[in-house]
Length: 342
Image (cartoon, rainbow, N blue to C red; front, top):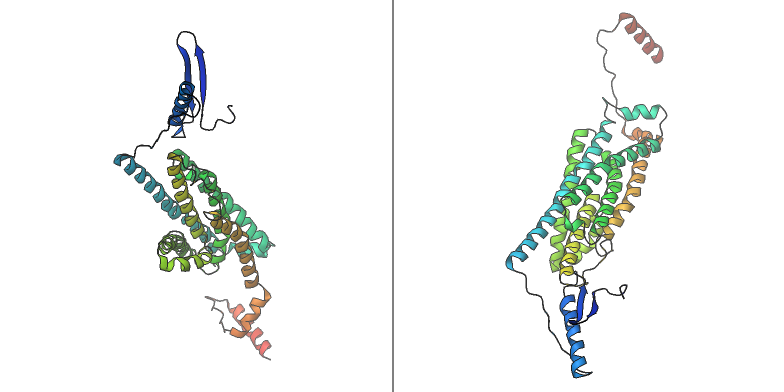
């Protein structure tokens, strides 16, 4: 029946004068379907003539790819792989822009965060508003990246359910890297240095650490060590993005090659734990963790306990001298100082 014909079907059409016409309806994705059904028809005719038990055996093997076809396929795979590196480099700029604005709001000449807090804004509300805004802004490069993949037909990120896996990875990266940027922002006082160092950090952990991990995994002596350190690598959202996209790209390319020879050995779940699932899981768990860590750091930094700790590190700070101070103000200042000393 049509419902059970996965690889093909035979259509028999008896005609007067010419005999019976047999039409083979075959699935074009099954490369062995046509010779198989031709042999099935030939065996049926042989059995009708010679009797049951007879048949025709056939050996079928596709012709090997030409050097040009094999080279083109390899080049396309390498181009798609390089696109992974380009994506990692481009997405390294996103946390750099986020951390710059957060640090700038704390700088002395700007200090808009302090103004909001003394106006009654709670720390939780402040960071939640920043998070929602940055996630909304992040949707723009995410959408444009997915759109460019479809426009330029980057097959390894679209075929074999790779499109959905890539979108889930991109979304998880945004949810993780935004609060991660908030956490590392507390280490800086100037937004310029914060932006540069954050960019370098995400580039190193996203691309270089991913390449280093891949090389260590190829060497037998360091393979176990690399596997033991993976949980440390995945602390950084950039590594999860790079490693996840690399696994999606590699396995999607293998699945495409397997489909051409009719093999289902490479028909795997790209979001499985043995592919990109662990990286995606770490991203979605890291988002709430880093956001909670950001709130804790900011709360304790502005809590009475933090001010109490300054008792053990007291510093005498002289008040800056006023320029062209009014004589009446000077006399009043001296009088108050003398009364306080008495």
